[in-house]
Amino acid sequence: MPEKGPNWVSVPGVRGSLAAVSVTSEPRSSSRAVSPDVTAQVEYRIVRNGLVREVERGKVPRVDVCDAHPELLRAARNVGRSTKEVCPICDDGRLVTVTFVFGAKLPPGGRCPGTASELKALCRRPEPVLCYEVEVCPACAWHHLMRKYPAGGGKQRPKKAAPTR
Image (tube, rainbow, N blue to C red; front, top):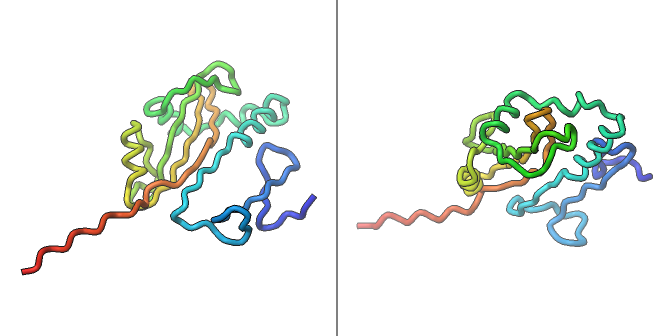
């Protein structure tokens, strides 16, 4: 197994595995960093599925994964978007998706948009923002980060110069 170095990370919920992390601006390029203008979405479904398997096998106690913060549960009940997916832990509740948006000129705790149009407006801001999409089961308090993605930071139109006299 390769030695753990700066480009290797442990994957939570998957015992004894390492995953290479390399973000590049071009295919087959291993040394160039991605430009801040490039948007990249990070999916966490593989990690989630590994954690669910560990709970099913009894290696991770249910109490360790059903521990959503009360504020997250409140957001799930009040502004979350319902899904058709059943909770993989309790097999009873329906999962709800909650999105949090963090960035400049937003509250320190971020913003939790209540509607799709509010989320779109936040994603069209001139300042860059980072969005975190979390799935939550309000019934048993299961929660897991599903994806994160950058948004906003679009190019602003130059202001028209005032007419000169």
